[in-house]
Image 1 (cartoon, helix red, strand yellow):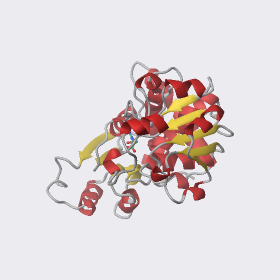
Image 2 (cartoon, helix red, strand yellow):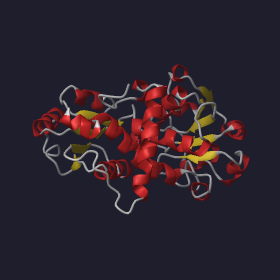
Image 3 (cartoon, rainbow, N blue to C red):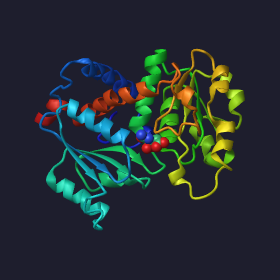
Image 4 (tube, helix red, strand yellow):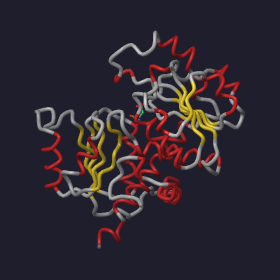
Length: 309
Ligand code: NCD
């Protein structure tokens, strides 16, 4: 089942994920039309409520909403009454009183999206809450992988790097496992969370040993802004042991795909030449993100039929 909100990849089973990806496929060609718009969410209002910096996710949601003909409101904490001390709850109640149909929320606190559902009737879409979840990122990653390989089931995937601070890692590992991929989480012990054995993944501290068997190498951004302690000696040291560079690329099978959620730290987790290599699907991830977000908005808001019901 999909909905009423999209908070956590744990809420989606394989059937729900497949429905979202299939629906996204239908929306993908809207981008190829001269007029990139369908009337699906005409008369619906969507608010993008961003308490934490974001470029690509916010723009991606906004493009998706506009391509579906929704009315879009952008609210960012900077320059709003949040800066004047208004609480999260009062902001939510204000949006509720204004009658928005859906809220896309990004917040630095894990659990913020869930909390919002208690205060508003609008559909809530989690666009990243703290280190917890970022479900649309995982869905666009699954879409990109399925598009490249024709399936997700049975693929060998490594998720590499700063897992402990990464809501993307939590979401994408969950989605991959649900879809039947074999996932290995790779990184230094300081950057891996303690409860990894509950994720249904393998764990490795040796990237070079894992690379030759991979179909997909998923690199995570080193999240300096969430690090309040020293997790590794220097960026150069990190790059040498955990970064994907030309030498490691040569060890990856030729058919293997490289993914990264962005924004990249070129020269840390990935070198510039690898980021631009033909098997890096990073720009595909960005364009697929729009179709996947259109799909989720459509499925949660029910299109025009939903509006009439
Ligand atoms: C991700 C995020 O914010 O969680 N980026 C994104 O959505 N564009 C990943 C990251 O910041 O590393």
